[in-house]
Length: 200
Image 1: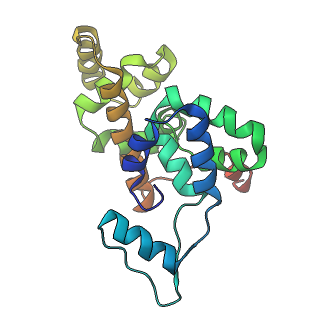
Image 2: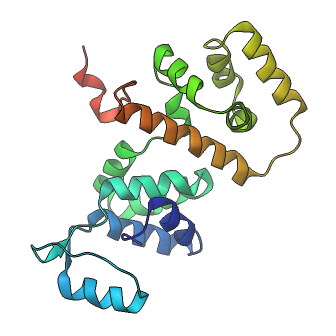
């Protein structure tokens, strides 16, 4: 799983019992490197191509990847897995939490950053993602839109038919990915919980 993209790993991981999910995620988070012979053996077994560096080790997994996988698994899995992990390794679980960035975190950003994000996301994703949002979160969005755009969004929410949770989570994931891209481009700043006291 550590060799896959987080969205692929999360889909596979969701098929396991929660105890196994927590154990696998803990192993991914603490994985530092893989000896070359194991990489070669796995490559043959999977009939895929993995390029091994000259140093003889390839780095996979880690806390950041574990957080990315959890972010993509949805809230129904996230809380339960973290609870199981916390029982065995609270410090590691705290580190993973610090690296996670959820849909709710997007709208804890400053108003300027939220407006940047709103310019980049589709109206369909925005409406779908707010389907299960509370009134406070919705108001945060409306206040960062023009009056006309806010009214149109309210209308979309009122007439929206029943929507699958997976579709809502997919739209929320698209918005999170947009926020991460804007952060990488230097257009917004995302504060992780452990970094908050570094700004004065």
